[in-house]
Length: 140
Image 1 (cartoon, helix red, strand yellow):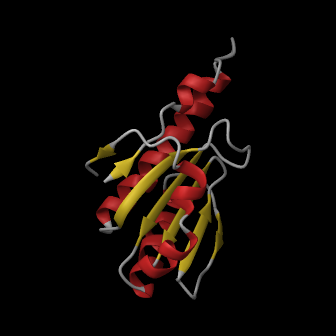
Image 2 (cartoon, rainbow, N blue to C red):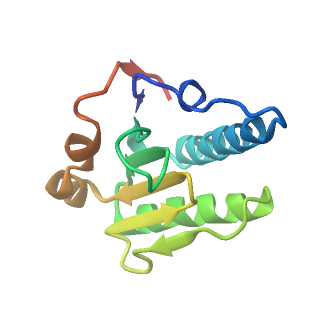
């Protein structure tokens, strides 16, 4: 399941005449799709996508999800990192390995937080960043 913000990234970017903003937007969308695909493939739980546009300049999108155990959290993170490299997105900055209670993958415009359920409940990033903008739950 995925919760999405009320505005899409495309609604917040005005396209330049050279099309460079379109390419950047496509790249962000491709990166989000890759991350969400990996999370689905690796059976991540309670995946939520939070639109950060207008809230902060650190990223455009935050994805928050859970793994069932430390090993599961680490495996999810490894899969995303490997697929990003394989698809040409480069090397993301990663924090939280090897402990795997909470792993942050900073891919620039997309942040992916992978938690163990107990740690996710403690930090409650969804409430901090997205409580005012959830629209609905989508299968995913």
